[in-house]
Image (cartoon, rainbow, N blue to C red; front, side, top):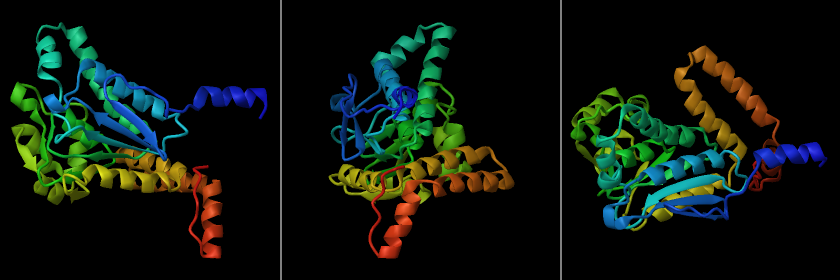
Length: 282
């Protein structure tokens, strides 16, 4: 590696295994990064600080070489109750417009960072999953729930529109326009069974197993062709605004890029040898 290549890598590659989070739990094991929303006494609400730190962490994940997939869960029996009433809602009432827009753009930037990081994100949703917590689950790539999960987009309950953090764009694509409209207009809670039947959850688990199953799924993803997984995630996001012809051409280009990776060759050689491929993400 010459000095110029080293400089390129230094500016575009990092590791996050030793990152210390200040406002939530963070750990990396076997390529799986785990975020724990860790205020169980308040049902794990978000604060100004945790919003910003989550946004910045997901931005950094775009450059992380040691994190191949991500799990998000809440400590205790709940996922996330949304923005903290005392730490966020109360101050917002008295803020002028520029600062209000600063806040809403920050929360939206969290969703953007989640959608643009290449790692698949798996949310393990148990108990309360409300407001911004419902958005975090929505912005994930895969969601595991439980029968006692309670999904609620509560914005209308506090006098706000349901169009928060991309909800009106993303939620209808997951559960359909009519069902999304019902949840966003009414703010009512959807049970775990409803969420699964509507396609919000990929599957339901026992409460005591949901985090373990999410981590198992994330480990399977981390063991796969992670460069190709990043391309899949990017195309799932970008093709929302493409015509069919544009999407087919974009996928042709994306698949040709994947065919040039070492993982593609590894998969063929393993198939020919009747063994399981060991992917390395390059």
